Amino acid sequence: GGTDIQPPPSLVGEVGLEDLETRLTSNAITRGRLTKDLETPGVWMLDGHIRATFNRQVAQDAEGELLLLTYGQPEFDNLIAPATR
Image 1: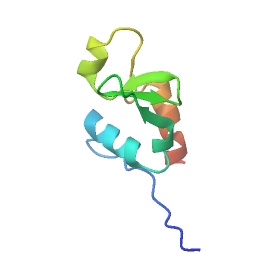
Image 2: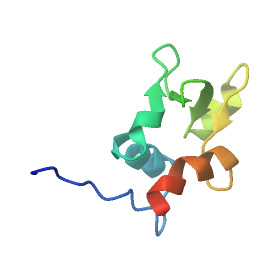
Image 3: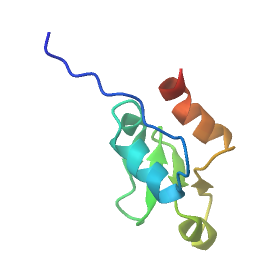
Image 4: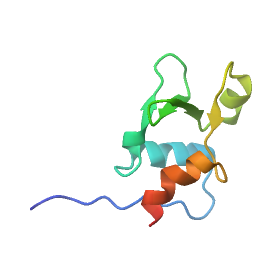
């Protein structure tokens, strides 16, 4: 058929946290796993149950558990794994 296949997000070079947020929340391979938390700006729900952010300040100021999604975090590695295979 006429289905367009979207390539995985490019995570090479100097990719900052803002770039990661833009790429991972807009790419067809990863965006379905991230849902915007409508109550807290800058916060996403990863897989429906993990509160996460790509913003260091939001992570530092957060009350309760909030994961900073960045390189080296197991949850981040798991999120991008299907995109890098």
